[in-house]
Length: 260
Length: 309
Ligand SMILES: Nc1ncnc2c1ncn2[C@@H]1O[C@H](COP(=O)(O)OP(=O)(O)OP(=O)(O)O)[C@@H](O)[C@H]1O
Ligand SMILES: [Mg+2]
Image 1 (tube, each protein chain N blue to C red):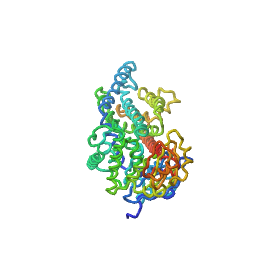
Image 2: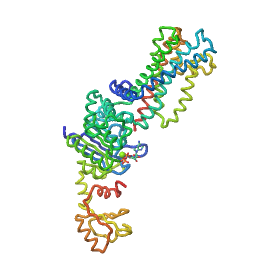
Image 3: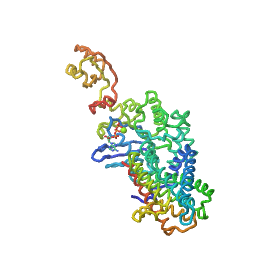
Image 4: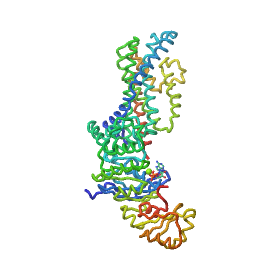
């Protein structure tokens, strides 16, 4: 496989992004609203409701403790959600990628154009969420300002392999597997709602494999002003490597699907 | 320069697994030419078109488009082609205009130019009044016109049209033919595939007849008819009698007689003389139609099958 950099051009990638944004213009109102409502419901329901029974974790009130986790998992869920049905549909029914294939746009541009779009969507959701939580007084450190960057990395790390998966399947029923065995366990068991130390030792490494856990720990360290369990560089490094591998896989899957 | 073919293929092969869809064809298309592929379902027309479009790589053989090699310069070549695929792949949730402008951006065309180009092309295919509407509710013919307009958004050197008018009503087909004719007059090189003989005869300077992945004949529509058929054809129908049963009684009438399931075709230089001979033999066909020979007859002769069933 030729190196990725020779296969992406800024011009074509931006043209793909532009198409995705043109489509988004028709639905942004509904989506911004839901990206705002969902985390707020989470905070109110679980944070305040459950939190009043839980008390404090590591000396922090429960709401402040889960805010960074919900933040990262918002980005994670949006990344996975936006990279499933839409990607499959653009191959199978809309055939938008086949249309692009007949132009100078290359598979790597299609992948990067969609990733930029998902990133854009995630950053909006994250910033809105951050603003809301600031009102709850759940942000305890100025380092909270870097959380959108970490969320961006979580978004890319989650979206890229999901796109690869979506480009490799023929039917949307496979998404149920992804949601059941990846999305939901990731959300429940990667330190969003309770520390992974409470998981049995044998399954803990599974949490470490998920990019979401690394995102959650970095976000938590940032909003609470504490140090994460691993060195920051190790968490970031893992997310970067995961993203790189995911992008390579996605480009490969796109290319494979479009060639014959 | 004008001598160098825009499309050049030698021994072009496309295999899908064990199956050979295109089986060693040679082609040359000159600048400004209107070139057609004619053939029945599964002949390999689309497979060939997709290789020429640089979206599918040849399994074997040599292929040069605009003097370049698709396996190396695919991106550059695609930038100079306009492709209308057999199946429309428009963005159903974008408006008619947005379909053109977003597609133009894939070629790196600046936004303002793309908008202007979109307006011109919408006029050209008579969709200007639908510019703002979504693609989804458009009729099949309108979508087809939009796909053809989209193929011209980058002012391509070659326009490749895979069955541009299949599924359209006669009026829509004639409108499209008229537009394609205009393109041809402007000197655009056209390559198209079709099942319709009249389309090929109207639009193509030169064409190849494909069957089973091979080229079985080539030339101008006229020369193909002259080579493989007679100037006129008499179509005879015999009410209840099966054409095959009448066949024996027509020995020596015209140059050749082909029985079809529902009628007999008598190939003759002079159709009226052949008809007179049929009556002289005491046969009483329920209907007689004398017409000029068409590519349909050429195809039937070459492959033993009709083109559109
Ligand atoms: N991607 C593919 N995988 C496997 N077989 C294919 C593929 N594309 C085409 N074929 C086969 O190759 C043969 C030629 O197909 P092709 O689409 O080129 O024919 P065509 O002349 O365009 O026919 P039509 O008039 O129906 O469009 C067919 O038998 C088809 O099933
Ligand atoms: Mg075809």
